[in-house]
Length: 431
Image (cartoon, rainbow, N blue to C red; front, side, top):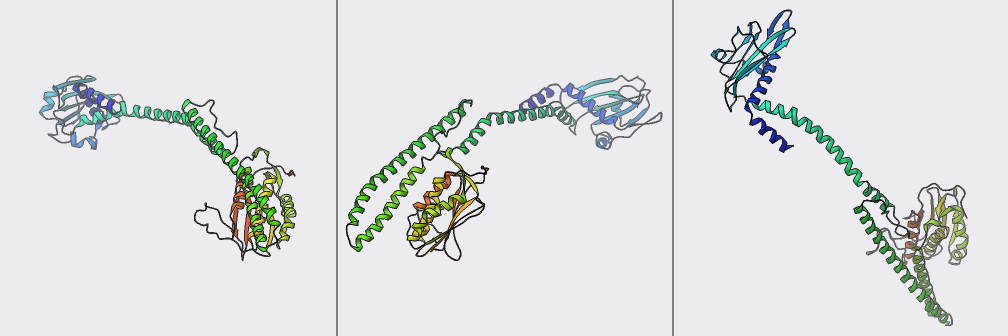
């Protein structure tokens, strides 16, 4: 647009006669705004904005307004009128112009006929110099009328079309981004769609798919490594336990207790390894009351043997989409945590709520809400615990799209809650 503006200005600048004609038309049109008619009588009042130019002498501009019969309605003329204007007794033409001195600054004289009602009025002007730079006003109006306005409209349409084209071109990118947000790296078929995409987007999607494949391979290798180590450790642990059971000594009894803790830790490692291979497509509608009651009944003997107590508090049997065995494992880990780390005689209550959620609450010694240095955010350790049981619970809930919430329970104790996502599920739970 700037280049075209410069070209237009240069073209007009090379043709001073055309500029003089445009200035004559503009000035006579502005003077004609002062004409009025009262019956058959014509009157003229110089517009205020032209007073400085045509209302004073020696301004470099002169003007005369007269009827076709030679009656002068307005005149600012001196000897220049006689020199440059047409005689009063000459019937005026519709338009005339004469260049006084070729080139710049513009010097010319001319006039044109305007109609007001059925009467003709002849307006003449002469420009001996252009101290008010009226020619620049003409150039500005020409640029505005013939270039800036059309090109601005064109620019608006071009920008609109460009933005539409960009949005259309980037739509596949947005779709791929939305699909990437929904990808689950634990699913074996998690991948971005490459078919039907522009070449560049398809390449990006292919790179993401390959990255996911490498991540799944690493996770599979880690699971295999963890599982193999856990299986290798279980056999020597069993042998050591058999040998310790043959020794009748208090130190052997204490070693057996430590060995049981180690065996429990190995079992939890195996559980973590198995979680990585869970297929989420096998989820089903589960009633949390039914599941919680079954878990409490199964663990009650273990709880009572440890000198603790346990009770179940049912609600409206909220239904969630889940793998029942995994939710039982999560609830069992929370209950075992309460028994092992809640202190002697701890009282445990298991219940459900309409969140939907399942909670395990105890009146034990609680936990330290500030994680030790090096622990990941959101982790905590019970007194004397390793925290791996809670990590299992967290991963189980992550698989279900939920989370584990833990908090102190006033006046003492801990409340752990399995929070499930709110979603539409069948009203009849599967057992």
